Image 1 (cartoon, chains in turn purple, brown):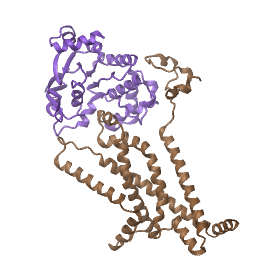
Image 2 (image 1 turned 90 degrees about the horizontal axis):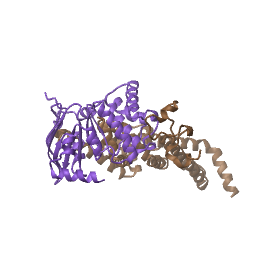
Image 3 (image 1 turned 90 degrees about the vertical axis):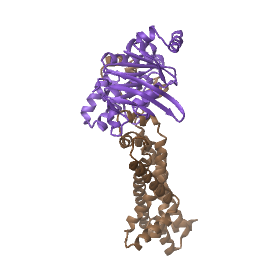
Image 4 (image 1 turned 180 degrees about the horizontal axis):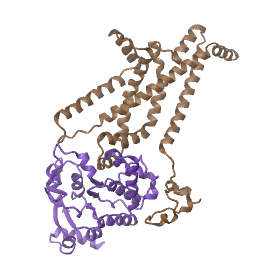
Length: 246
Length: 273
């Protein structure tokens, strides 16, 4: 029995002849906040989508508590209920109110009764500061508010790991602030997270482990201090210097 | 002209009740047919979009899904591609050959339903593929299965988008059920034929029937609009708190509590309140 929650082993993914991920290898332990950084098109999002089985890996394996998630006997729905995901484009259910968005998974997937689901959802909406908006529809909210609801929706499932796919890339600077505040709090509460992000300050301050990806491979990984203070790979140095210039 | 109105009055006096009964039959056939047609359409649409995972699903399941898709395709093409009047004769008299004597009503409902279902299947499929794939991914990410995703997330949104098409089908059904007179269902058009057979008042009876059809279809369009509006829900929402302090705690975009009810999606109109 392994103590890692998630192990990515020699993971490769290609769309047709286009290779997006090549032999990616890393592990996530309970309580880890792993930030995946890198240029757009380097395969970060695909990596995350493979971990959540939204994409099927071409080869290699992803292990969840030592179990291979691509195995035939493995139930992807039950797995996704334990590994939450927050998307760049929010993907809130447009036909439901804020509260219904957060209770949907609890009621239909975990089969909780309405009242229990409601209480869990309200608790998590409170955490992200969206509790007063429970009657609003997604189209009536701003981007930052939508993303906070999306985080509350994922949290309501009480996931073991939460995956963030560029959660702030579609937001303006002020909204980025509100979402990152929520995420910092979650990290402080000890939630295991894998965050694909372009927010270097967040990656530096919050993460316990940083993975730098370039052209579908992990170019460098280590603690935030390793990556941000003493990058070894010239590509990492160049990537980070471009961010420092901004 | 006076003669015309006089004749109309005369026809109505003698057969007014028959027209109403005919209109009732037509409306009932159209309503039931459209309702079950929509159910068939939603079921077929949802089945046509069952995902197949080449790596995970066993061969027998993939084969079954492909077979199902094939059967559904045949159903849609067969009933979309032949006239309803022919289908009516084919099913009603065809079943009789095999010793199945369908009740006239049952036959009527059956024919209108499966005919509407064939059209609705394609409409629903269009409605489903038009929904942003992000909605499906969002549902998958909380662990929903294909059927849960369909029932709770995709179909409710697809329904809203295809109401205009449902309306189209309903109105088409109000008019096209007239062909069911071939299996001697006494709908509005059948009444018209009987009346002109007895009185030879072609123009007058046709005018009356036209007006009744138009009244039914206009009413149908109006009610469908109301339904669309109801499904859209209210434009406004109220914050779920009476505590004004809550407006400033942890909510960067909290609207000013003075301007209740909030109208955030129409900022321009609400701003001057």
